[in-house]
Length: 137
Image 1 (tube, one colour):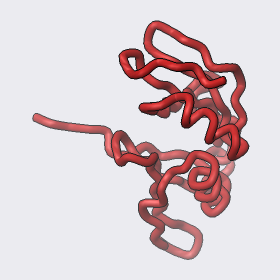
Image 2 (image 1 turned 180 degrees about the vertical axis):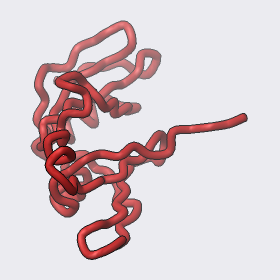
Image 3 (image 1 turned 180 degrees about the horizontal axis):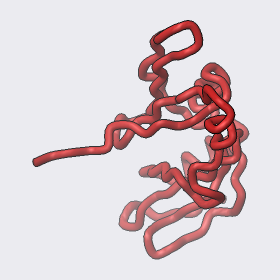
């Protein structure tokens, strides 16, 4: 048997703002953007390289969903963006205005730094141990 996690819903207040942030700040690709009705779209973004789960950008449609934007991890890191070159991606993301909440640090599992999305969600940028380990300056 073979299974994989194909996509994860990611609540956003606005489709176009979210597409712009994922594309322009993180360098993600817009995989699909299809209208499903007057105020609903199927929007899928994915990190470069095509590995791992994609994000389905889901526009919050009611007060409960709007309250949940940015709160998927309850204040903890909820998303883990793995890279093959931490220094390269950390520098590029900082240059594009991504807000890192801490300096890079080396852990037993790799090099990591926490960053925030515009809606308050927390992410790890991580280069797993075993890859060429170098800290961004």
